Image 1: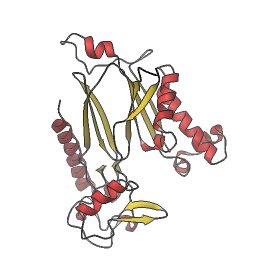
Image 2 (image 1 turned 90 degrees about the vertical axis):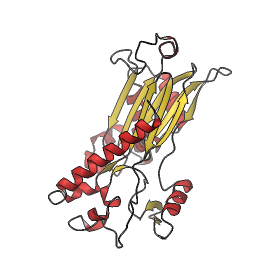
Image 3 (image 1 turned 180 degrees about the vertical axis):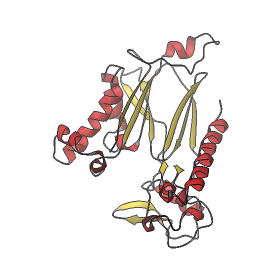
Length: 273
């Protein structure tokens, strides 16, 4: 495993999806506006690889030996135009475009359309040939572009795991809009392994309901298509790190294998908006 292998996997996925868009363009032009953030975590030979394109986030829960508390350590940075560093990167990549990032409805957006600067898909901002009719006018730019506006290349972090590392939270921005890194870590630490991800999702939804001065049960009754006005999609994976397995297992044992069910090594929670 290497950062180069992961980067090539992202780009291969991007290439395959853009080929799909090209094949379906005339019959399903809306597919050119379809895209996704992508966040992956890989553990291999005691090393942790985090690769991110978009505004999902990876957070590590690590034991502080002095206080015995579990501290939150953020392992990824969001590619979102709300961050000054992302706006600076976009302006450096597109120095002749004063409208590369604009404030719209009090939110920074790339070309006034989208908040993220990296993704898989979103062909309408990758290739000019997909930014024209029959694509809906709301996705079209008024001026042509000769280089991709968004990127698919991930930012990759590689670091050695240590025995104090307890678990990893991988989640979409729908969770982090409602919970801080430390709040999420505290919830996972206080929950049984089987159900921690679902607890995170429910807590985030409760916060979304509270903001709208409504009950959680009433929020869940709202149709999915309408719920987007109340909260974003939320996907959460919690991966528990077994230090005995990671650091003391026989070298012939595949360090990347995990088991599910009951006292599983991972937990997943998903809610659509």
